[in-house]
Length: 209
Image 1: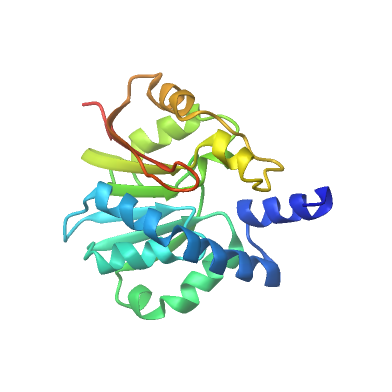
Image 2: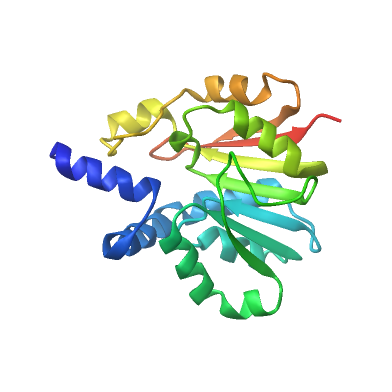
């Protein structure tokens, strides 16, 4: 892919916008639906749980959490296009109080302390230059016994298959684990690797109490 188009594609992956952003979100929803479902399954939210999808993109994770019966879902996303799309697609769920859509990131979530029983975030850590604030924020928003599930493609495999990676911060999963657990506020309770094209890892963390 020519560098100009690679940069454009990477920007849309990081923060969808405009007409191209809509197409990018559709593509990501289709390609990641199974991985996101696996992350929701690993989060194992109770029927009355308060949950979140951080960096929800096209919204398939929101739909999966709602269909899983979560009591309340927070959709947290930096892209205004993605937030607008979610507000249109989930009008009924927002009106019923089952879903709230917010501007935010893994490093900064507009939620009170101890709000979440479960959180998922898929293919987002590549856009975070420093993971220490992510660890602090996850530990802050999780309720005791809550779970944060991060879905992460293998950095080497992303390079091998030629993904547009302009502006990405790529790290081996072991390095991500080390960064998120360094201050002792989070611990890894499960780590699964899927047998797929990107060697996708499902990383489950809980707050240390």
